[in-house]
Structures are given as C-alpha cells and as structure tokens.
Amino acid sequence: MRFHSAYKLKCQLAICLLTKSDCYGHIYKDYKDYKDYKDYKDYKDYKEYSMLRGLLLSLSLSLSVLLLSSTVQAFECFEPSPVYLSLGEQYFESDDDRIQVQGNEKKLEVLEKLKGEWDGQLSELICEGSEEQPEPYYREGEVEADIRPSNTALLLMSLSKEYNSHYFEGDKVFLMNKGSMFSLRINDDYAMAHERERRGHGGIRHGSRFVEVFSEVFIHTADAITVEWVLFSNGVFVYSQRLVLERD
Image (cartoon, rainbow, N blue to C red):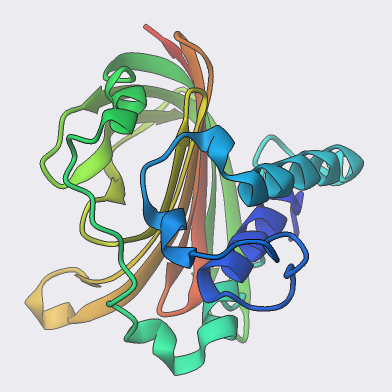
C-alpha cells in the first residue's frame, strides 16, 4: 500500500540539508554557515528553505492524483528511513547534532497559541506483520484533542479517538520533544521537526527501541489546524497519523 508521496519528498529534501549532501547542492550553494539552520531566525530569512518549500508545494499539486484516502503518507510498511539510508550506522549514534531548545524562545509562541480543546477527523496507518510479510492496517475515525503544556515536548496532545461509533481509544502524543530534535522550522502558519532518540519499549523487560519522528503542523487559521507525523522504529517505517482539527 503506497500513498501520496509529497510528504516523503519533504523528508528526503530535509535529509539533504541535515546531512549536507550534494543532492540539492544548487539550492544551498550560497549557504556559508550550516549552523544558522539550527538557529531561531525569521522564516523568510531562509532562502534555501523557501525554495524547497515552493518546490514541494508544486510537487504536491502534481502528485495529488495519487492521493489514496485522506492520509498524506508516503512510506510503505517497514521501508527504511531516508535518514538511515543516508547516515548508515551513524544514524543510531549522532547525538552531537541535536539542537538546543529551551522552550521559551519567542518563535515557539506560535505553538503556544494552539493549546486548548480541538475536535475533528483522524487517519492512521499501522504496520503489523513483519518486514518479510508486512500487513498495513489503515483506519479512520473521529478525535477529540486536548493540546496542553508540557515540560518535555513543544506539542503534547491527549487524544480521545472513536472508530466506527463503537470503539474508543485514548492516547497521548508527544511531538517535537525538546531533547531529541535535529531540526526545527517554525513560522506563523507552519512548524516542522525531525527528532531521533532511544526510548523504552513496554517496560524494562522489553528493552528499548530507536525512534525517529518527522512531524508537521499546518496552521490554516486560529481555529483550524492539521497535524501530521510519521514514526520509524529501529530505522524502518511503522506508523503514521494525520489529524484535521477545529477548535472546540
């Protein structure tokens, strides 16, 4: 099962910047200080990123005919992460490149304004089975989201999900965790983050797994947003979620 590939293209283009590879060298050929990409500056100052954004928007339009359901999902179950393919085994070790986020930076006020109660629609892709025999499981439902303050994440959502009017499920989603981000982009109507870290998996007896998350928040108006994120576990794609929300 393969979905609309616009989001995957965003990830791949972001990888070029994260790894300073040559794949899109013409886009940042005049760029002199890579660390500036990790600073909180005005979004419009990033000429290279603006060019990427325009390219991605045009690609999204041209690929829209490939859209299957409302989920903007590009990866097949257990497909390797593009970051892992770029970095190799260093993928699991490169902690030095993480950015420092305190949580009180002025740009983060954009996310602060999202706190409160929301409701809307959700779509998910859950990867079951094995890499040899993947079993993608797609589901849609209604959702109530409470975006609340967090000491560890820039975006914490408590979700109440309802599927087929009879099955209910609660969940907490921590996105843009302050200690695990390698990239963060924010402007007045958009936020994107890339994070990687090792996390406990089901308690001490179950050990840990290496988690990578790409997340995006589209702020359409003060009362309407879309949140999308994809999850890789130990270097392969396992889950995606898309929330289309209106303020309650």
